[in-house]
Image (cartoon, rainbow, N blue to C red; front, top):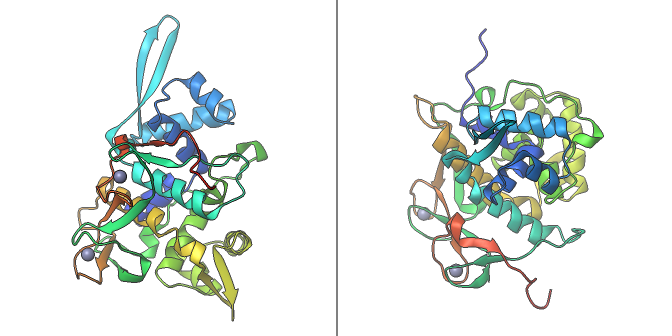
Length: 300
Ligand SMILES: [Zn+2]
Ligand SMILES: [Zn+2]
């Protein structure tokens, strides 16, 4: 039997389920373009950086431009595809700030330059404009959806210790920075809870599932009772990360048959597209209008 064609969910898990990819994209969005600058701003080895710059260029998340011929030098410039990942990164930033208090360097607040306030992003429904949460959004497979088409085909290669990002978003990386972890999170959001279901539906190696489940319960994203694994409040708070990532993937990796996942906002009955707004001024957020606040908010 032929391998099923990967759909948008498989692209999402394959591309974003890698911690270094997210960190390199984040640096690129902040304006880093040159090899040496990526290297000095990230705790990354030469071989890992070279490999990620190549895979991101192949995936059209970066474009390589030559700026000097003797000796040859290139820079890596963001594309529309990677620029549009900002809602995912902003959602990760907010989750880490709110749920992971023990950062060695506290994350700065988020400033919305339109209103000047230190803001938090709010997920709203693109159809009705109201705030939305995982409680009022339901997911169904679309024409290109099924678990077999949603799992990326390439095996996660074994990583060396130096291959792990030390970094900025440690807990997000232990959830998302691994394709089985990210797949488990998606499965939990659609209601899957038993070890055997995770294993058979995702067609995952039991060792990988056991490994991720122990990490998820360890950091308090899942809790286990009566042999079922369920999202905790902290886990459910990853909803914005998940819906912004899914929106991004379905925008850039459309299948001719139709979407992989169809989200419906039950409050209004309309199709759910995640739109991030500012909690202070209610304006729709734009990537170019968000910056790190220089000082931590008062009372923190
Ligand atoms: Zn709605
Ligand atoms: Zn605002």
